[in-house]
Amino acid sequence: MRDRQIFIGEAATLLGVCAATLRTWDGVGKLVPAGRTEGGRRFYTESQLKQFMKETPDARYGRLCELKVTYTKVKHAEVEEV
Image 1 (cartoon, helix red, strand yellow):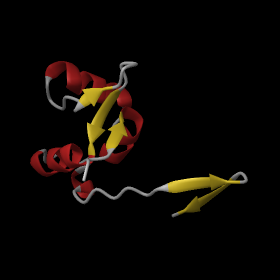
Image 2 (tube, rainbow, N blue to C red; image 1 turned 135 degrees about the vertical axis):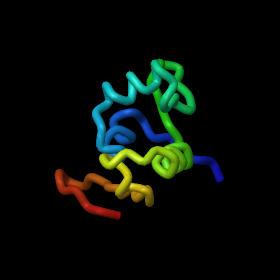
Image 3 (cartoon, rainbow, N blue to C red; image 1 turned 90 degrees about the vertical axis):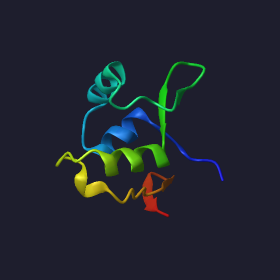
Image 4 (cartoon, rainbow, N blue to C red; image 1 turned 180 degrees about the horizontal axis):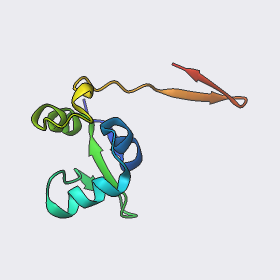
């Protein structure tokens, strides 16, 4: 099974930081994206973020050790949790 790609905005939300922080971490090597799309967008993998959260004892995202992703679908201007 392939690891789901998580783009920078969602990764920032899950970690409790802003996207600019993730860009800084990328620059200094603290959390380097798993890859980039052809268009240059950074992405992380679900397992990469889980591992980072286990290894990095920062209070802002320490409570997120269990990565919980809620999938939503939009239907007729209503948001429905799946």
